[in-house]
Image 1 (cartoon, rainbow, N blue to C red):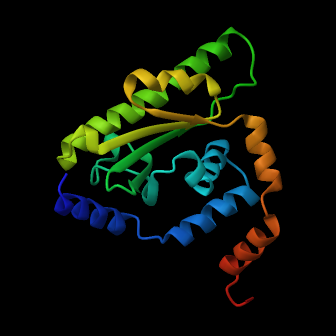
Image 2: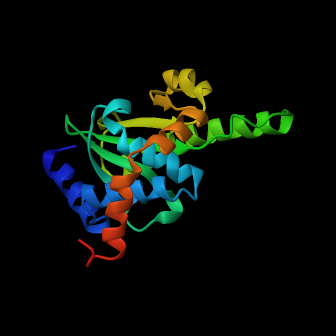
Length: 193
């Protein structure tokens, strides 16, 4: 990927995802205050703790958008980051219910584990082909609530990170809500500043 190709892709991202990093941060902080979707809460944790989880990531370029122009049928990527070294980092997230028991639940967990890896690897290939980027210029990561994924990334060159459901919930409860509620009230009613 040349500097020109990277600039072209970054321009494309800014066109389809014009929100600032601060706007995206406010969105995710709102998710913490009003959690209605476990996957979105997991994504909020990832975004707000990115430096600790995936330290090479510098700037969020796309969130829940197709990196392949308007071809959403080819898949959306949860997160596409520009790294500090000028490559791209694709991250897929998956909330996996590790607390459910029984044979059916074990099969479901395994299916989710396989699916999240399949998604990020497939996107990497499509991304490389569509944007004419070498595969080594694209890094991949998976972030879930299942620590069992740790070893699965080794053979397929995918960085894996996880957080337990209990830790995620504790983080949500302990997040500095007073600042977040105040910021959300400014977004809802901008005259109360």
